[in-house]
Image (tube, rainbow, N blue to C red; front, side, top):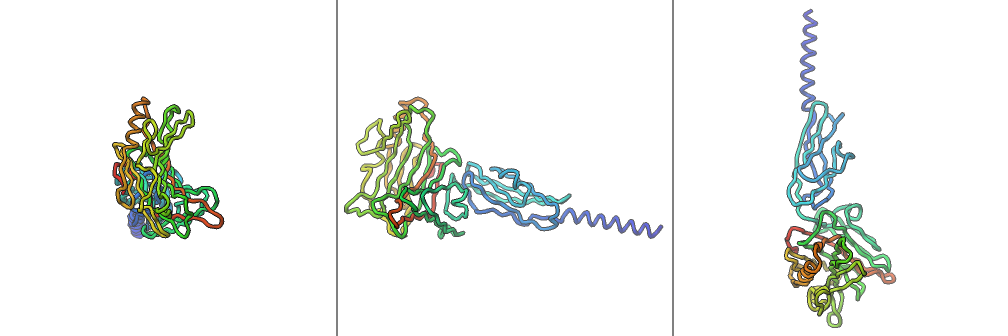
Length: 356
């Protein structure tokens, strides 16, 4: 009888010790993310590092903003967080469970602007929102953004371009767009690098709308002989397929010039092989247009402001411009020679801050 009591005492103590051990046998030691700052709608890999008995382990992910990429990853140690469409700091929490034991860890996720890309991601041209046409692409990605670039080379006689849809959230006025870019090895003379912002067509086909802002730069032009820029915007009337570009001397209802002359010579646009320059176009909350080159203001304009005022007065219920795509096109291939453009960064704001 005494032996039986000893046996049961040992059994109870062992069971208690085992139960206590089960309650602390799992721990999330690290919670990691791919990057430090994020843009609207960005898909961000996040993952947990867990110590302890991993048999039967499952995970639960929660966030104070944004969403996760569905049922496929919800119970795994890694997940894909989709950033919300507003600037702010959000908290992600991962909880690991194993039987009666659990462990949680949280981290902060900082969403800073509508969009940015410094071409550091392996997924730049694969599911990250960029599309290209008539190009071959090389990504020189690096954890150091000062060393990362995307090289886009023309591969045919058709116009090459790189484009991104602006569907992360509505991109309405005010907005600001800045791209840092250049060219290397060979540039086809007489052809522009064109920075374009395209806009959605409104529901009423009988109402004209701003369809494109187009900024053309001729980086190798001899300014002693020829112009090296053209900057203008286009209005379009769907009902009769009528397109009009702003030009010198235009008066309402034609689209008004952004700068006069709309085509001319400006030394800041001259670029040699390997030069990289920043080009910024913005429309502020008062519909005033701004253009910056390498952080220096080139001009401001009431051209868009005055045309929009006319449109709102003339067409009741006029829809505000809503940007739909950002695009950079460049010279097509000529014989065996192909132009390569180098893109360093693209930033887009929708909070009223003008990018310079």
